[in-house]
Length: 196
Image 1 (spheres, helix red, strand yellow):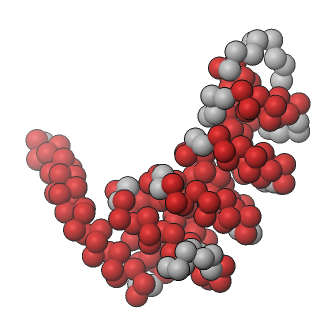
Image 2 (cartoon, rainbow, N blue to C red):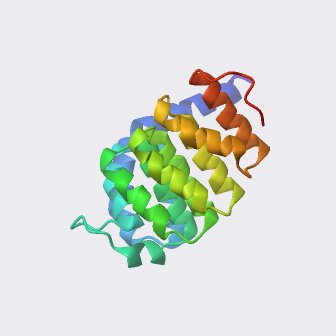
């Protein structure tokens, strides 16, 4: 009985001790891996929040070594790889990757990947992304993308977020999005009497 309780803890300790060397090896092997192996590698790097992975995420999401955007690279990747790269960039919060995520959002055709991109942009909690998030919200025809935009805008503790939050309250958005906007407005000092 005790062995079954101790084993997961030991595995966790061993895996965290070897995570950094393992990450370095995985990053080197990434270009030669199959798509499924790339997904597994990216999942591991994302879960470990490996800072050394940021250049890999950026390169394989469409940001070339010469720091210019490379659209074909992004388009050639599977949706799962694009999602994981976006998630990894959001968790690492590398300031150099925020413009890439915004650019990526403008190019991405799939709603499920867009949801992950917007979620990652929201993790930066950078008020300078407000115009972009507002634009993505207005242009979206997917409820999941719209909701992630609302969540990201709701994180801002800045009066500049009030007009878009009021628009969300009046707009044709899901009830959950309007509730999120209402709670954010209350946090910014607006009265509880704001309707749905």
